[in-house]
Image (cartoon, rainbow, N blue to C red; front, side, top):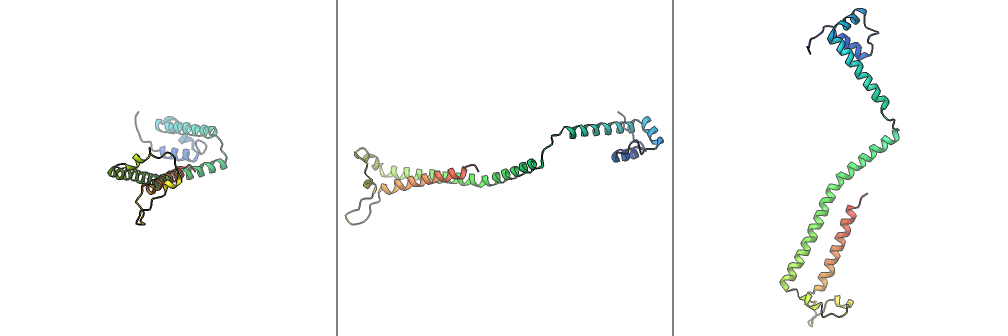
Length: 171
């Protein structure tokens, strides 16, 4: 392929862009385009690209404007949900980390005290609600009982699970 500049190629290109080729071209310019390789290639490629564009426009499915608007709204809404989901994921990870730290703290505190509450479980023959209430010492002060810790920890775990579930629920 030899690249040559043609002096009349700009004029042929202008007529092709306007869609006025060959009607508005002079007889001299048409004769030149028939003999010039560069101008004839330009005309051939332009005609082929126009034909391909016309065929693709005809083959394109006709979609109603309502469907296009609905799809655009759906994309916009999904983008907003993705933007909001990132901080929610951070909050979920934070809640999980707090829960794990509480469980570890409970396990460490019980390991230091010797897991005394495990020894009392086999002795209990029936479960009574009043066993959850702390015993009052003789001097009138409350004992630091495990019975405060277990329901409180259970409530924190339950509420943490509910919060994580509600936060991750799909809209």
